[in-house]
Length: 566
Ligand code: C2E
Ligand code: MG
Ligand code: MG
Image (cartoon, rainbow, N blue to C red):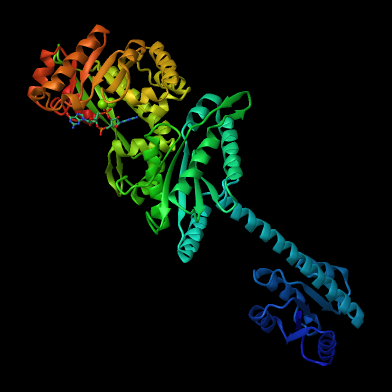
């Protein structure tokens, strides 16, 4: 039933109007002036206001103005009844928001017609508004629950689906398997064929996954190359293994991208409810831990979670969020660790090492956040910041006339696979004016081996620029010695693990001696890392090592401290 508010002074006419409206099926409320009328309207908003105030001398315009300024009333249609027949007055009412203006005398039919048409319009508006709101809500829901690239559920919806599956399984005494799946070569495909190709591949992977899995399974895309699958009520572990193998197998068939057929390899980690945990966020982390394990195996492999696998804590997720803001909030600093020549005794170089102090968390070691930055792609921005900061500093030192030192910057494997790195570096060198021979780049053996052909191409370009190239942590990766000949490098940095305590470890002594000899045969300079004692230093000197770096010479220090050492 529509509710009408009649604002008009008491009397014969109002009485007649109210009974007419009530007999037509409306619920009618009355008020005798602007103030009481507004009060009633705000307490119990009517569907329409009928204002006949000019009849009593109190202005309809006053009421219209007041209604317009009250947000909760402004949308209510108002029909004005007046004795004034001049057009100016009527226009004034309409301009103040009146929906119609009835001039007395008018008959009952006219009044009913005006009311009906207003209410009908109002209904149509409300309906349109509701539809719009529903569409908006649906769109928002899609945006917040689905991945826009693949149209698969995202991590929010995955958690809901997982919770649902777990609750059902708990009632029926069943299991749920959570698979965390990663495409191992997406980054490479993005780098070599471009992001549109990577996007096409991701969509194709999504289609293939939903195509082979039964409809009861939930497939979600979590981040860049990571997907998750919830298998409700598998009969056994073997069942889960069989389905996982089927998934890996289907993704190992080629994908045709425009102009290319590409192959991807997949790693999968699996956690089981209730065997591994009953808590869904723990299950998610366990599946990720198993995934990390699987990634360390040969490609296309899967692993069930085992309690001895390291699970990333909630802290790590927090850290990732903080890391996203660390560059713009200028939370990074550079420390320089001196490298001393055993021939001249001079500090001839320094390694630039990044430092991160989070305002609340405090110091976070690069060994902890660099892998996270690589995983999330943030390393590109961080690496560029590092190169620019270091080159600016080194150029400043030269300009101040300090004895020249070569500054080494560490490069991540992700940067090594970025075709634009060389251009970026060229720009930085041009901007800072640092002569290229004062810059060295350190690349670990493991990083090189991830995609040796791409890396090799880039190393040659960097070499052509004139910067020095060093292999870092040598001896800890799997590089075959054969590569050493082909790599356009100048320096070999022997990893700490061979140096530490070498003075009473015959095996390490043999290794050190051989590596130094081999490097010299290939005309490479050798730097020994992590030198902490005089005994280690003496040993390295007797093996003809070229440079030493370590706490004995100096821990990583600020730029000012390094200047003091020079
Ligand atoms: P790295 O390049 O091998 O750096 C040498 C590490 O050994 C540094 O650790 C250094 O502080 C530490 N160290 C130096 N002398 C001694 C010593 O005598 N004894 C011991 N026990 N340790 C010593 P840090 O600074 O924690 O860095 C760890 C790793 O993080 C680095 O290993 C490097 O791989 C990476 N890293 C640091 N800064 C950057 C950066 O700007 N970019 C990239 N991509 N990686 C970085
Ligand atoms: Mg290094
Ligand atoms: Mg090192």
